[in-house]
Length: 161
Image (cartoon, rainbow, N blue to C red; front, side):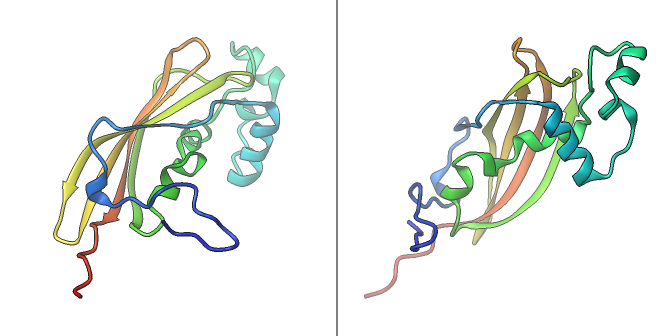
């Protein structure tokens, strides 16, 4: 378990071999507020009125601000949960992601996100762990699905005595 005085370990260190297909990592739910829309617009530079002008949205048939797909995608950041704390010593990198946006997300929607191990591809000293990412709204409708891939170290051999 990695720990220091500034960042105590939240859970046991895990290596590629310690994960199994089907293992689930739920993320905290989040209501997508207008403040989050403003923060996303500031960070992304996206200036389309569908993401910041309520009257524009209503004039175009939307009940309110429409979330950009990337704004929905970032809700699946593994760092929002415990998973990255499990791989502090084994994580080599976040190497790939893909996603599909299936339904609109509006200001006021509450999203529930889940990461689930979907594939483990072992290598000699590392392995690729794939996680399916899903986002459901407050009505239980799937609004986004995708996949994230991480390169993890395999468990180091025991030290010789």
